[in-house]
Image (cartoon, rainbow, N blue to C red):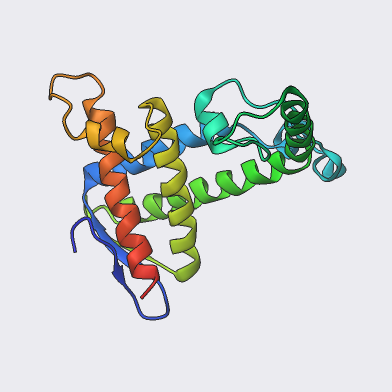
Length: 200
């Protein structure tokens, strides 16, 4: 079972992780949390109504990783819109972002925290490496977080399509991006095996 998820009764999944793998996934999930940032409730202090009435940003993020995680809702990557169409797309995207981005960020934070908590519980066993057993709900949280991690790393590596991924396999060992590439490919394998497991 090393590196591959296997089905558990009741719709869950299990995977054997060693100490280094646990540390890598946890570190990446913490970095993702830091990148996404705190939610409106954390910014607002003790006001319980602040989150309810908080509006999100109307402009797309400047960081390309955040833009990949929170893309514009209205755009046509295939075509070249007219100036009027482009302006309409920007306006619609801005309005959509204002009312949805806070919830999207909260969902991504929740998934990353679920991964961190399950890894912390696993590490608390003190065995160095162990078999991580996830419920069906935890498996879905993991799947979402693995996807977000791959999007974030892929953005830093300028991965846009399958051709870019193929080029990563041919990077020389001395390339400074190599550790990030290895993490990207490994997380992809984990994600694929979890998808396959959950579809059984």
